[in-house]
Image 1 (spheres, rainbow, N blue to C red):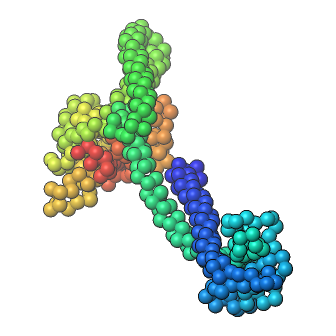
Image 2 (cartoon, rainbow, N blue to C red):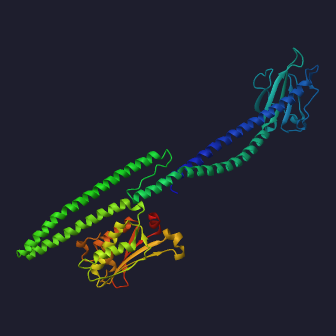
Image 3 (tube, helix red, strand yellow):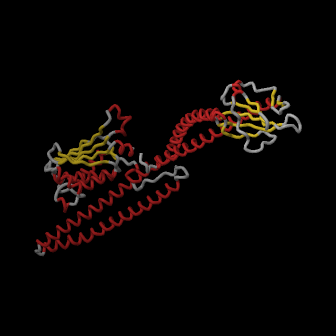
Length: 467
């Protein structure tokens, strides 16, 4: 998937945004958890300090004494991380956990309320200190009450929580990224329809984007349809101008033909021959332009689902060709089943077969055969898979045929007789364009009759579109 893909941008953007949000949440939750643990620790230290204050007294030397001490055994274990200390200006009383180390003195004067701070304490520990000055007797000597806990336990709890939270948030990130991918897939699904409809519009100028799109896409679809309308109008105008020009040239060509006959009757045979050749070349160009104009109209309506029986069209075309000079002495064979239907309008199929049968009759020695068949479904499946078969028409003759290189040249050059010489040029080119306009293909290969075989084939997709 390309980095320029809109889907990839949405996926990467969504994943990155979710990751950033969860990373910030991880930091915030770890901080809030640490604050919570710290508040719990301060609450426990306050209870311990209140027990010390409840039994606090001073002896005659102003040495602090307490009748109640906290029950936590860590207060009696050296360097346990839990300490208390009662101090006056003359002496102090400490918990066994301090051993011979004092707690750090206050940096400022303490008041009558419990205050907390963080300070470096004994045993190189960073302590959470709770302290307050109390007076056991009114107007007596003030006593500094200090209770402390090593912050390492708080940090350890915070780190353990952060690790577990990170694993959970990583899993949550994965789930949310998948959900974001699904959301992107569903959100971009309407564009798949737009792409399919644009493909149809590319194939047929008459196709349009449907109005059944989300409101965000409707303006785009309307703009594309307006552009398609303008393009179709331009194509129609160009086709009409080309057709009008071709029709307009027919009258001057007829006049030139009359002048040629008069010149020949006057004895200028050589000049008349040259004039006839020029007229013939111009007439070929005019007929080719008219045929291409017809092909353009077929392309504009090819996807509307037209179909025609092949045998009826072939017999109709042969009936016309048999009355021509080059078709009167030919033997025509029709081997097309009555059930064969091809995805073309009847008049388009008649023009396709007309071009191919006429070319075959012109260059055949004696025989011309038109055959048709279906491929891809057995007879017993015909009722259910009739629209999933390949339809094939073949027009063969027993004439001289064309070499492979020349046949490809005929199709590639667009069927201009003045460039390819005598042969299956113009008819083959027009027939190929007619076939491709309806989703078919035209191929040339040697015939079993000895001449050329022209095969027109419609794939199951084209056949199903017509159905």
